Length: 327
Ligand code: PCA
Image (tube, rainbow, N blue to C red):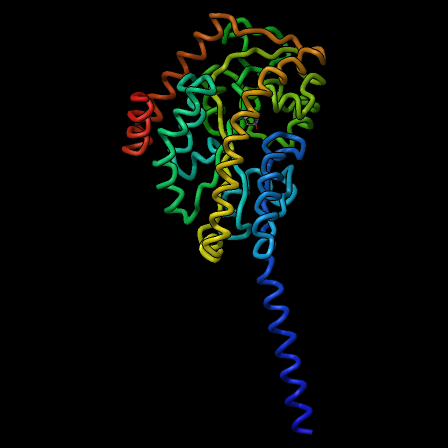
């Protein structure tokens, strides 16, 4: 009887060991994303995951969850920070309440082209990484949205046309900008955009052609002005505790996949920028350049916002701007 019990115990231990190894062999990493699965940011995250899984699949399996299906856009950063998800993607400039450095990404007219935006990224990366490290996070890659323009349900010649208009904001800066132009801001995540415009909760917003295309904004608004105000980025961050549990080989696989994704993502955003504009027009929207008056109006407000931000952002912000100006 004793011998049998011993045998059973060791068999069970074997099973336990085997399943421990099996689960260690491929730990699932859920990767929440805020944007729709067909958006290029989400597709990029999916191919990043595939790349990692193909090379390090015996250790981790990254599973992407697009469209805010696992965590809403506004919850993703906190979820990764708290370890509820080991990895996730978030709009950098929406994290101003975490630290002002993240707002550098949506300061109007600071960086208005892909080239300038890349420089701003390089200039602000050390400061961003410092802040992320304090939050026990690691930056893997960041990819821009195309230049931001103005969606409206009527012609807008200058900023006075925006007075009293319900304005959808995606971060504190766009809320502030709306207030400064006398519009009425409401913060809404992209996943809820179509609904907000359909019900009249929002009548205008500043965003890329990409998001207007994804959300079929032509069903609700008539105009898009190519203001080229800034190019906000999404970033993919990983929880440092989860990161440190990975083998050095898998860490390297992820770093390589991230570098590849970042390069491909910047190229894709550039490539798609004009295509999105064409799609808005093809679906009946009036796509136009911003009038000099409108652009000047935004530029004035932008300059005030940069000044205000510099006061709040401290040394980190000043260093990043100084580095950017030297590039
Ligand atoms: N689309 C996202 C952020 C910037 C952009 O172009 C949005 O509208 O929420």
